[in-house]
Image 1 (cartoon, rainbow, N blue to C red):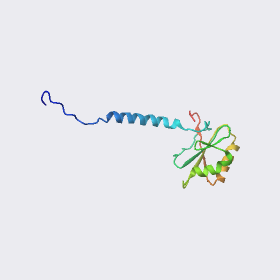
Image 2: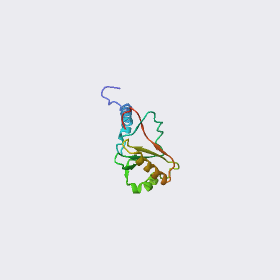
Image 3: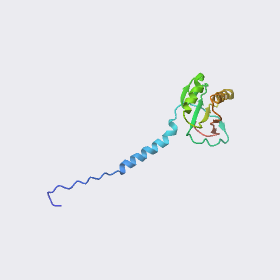
Image 4: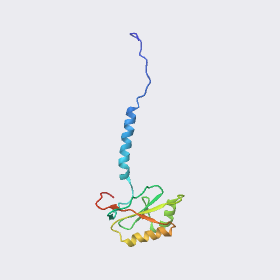
Length: 138
């Protein structure tokens, strides 16, 4: 290079800051995703040693709040439309798993009625979600 000559532009993109920002956002979303669950606040019953809850693929979550309100996959459902809404939520899933998340203050009779409604809708076997005794959170 000589004095007075313009310097050649070098067209290179530094992607290191982009990768850093993307990784930070990924970590933030991984931490916040479990807390972003919608639906009713349900105080789960305690148990000394709950089994592993399994993965959430192909799972239909039925929640029963403290007042006895029904929710399917975080959407409120009227009791008279429960069966057809449950079948619609299953869609074309070959073997859907139905899991009940009921409030600890409910009578077992209310949970049992929901279990019977699930059976009448054509689903076999129902799982129950509980939390370990002394565990924090929902």
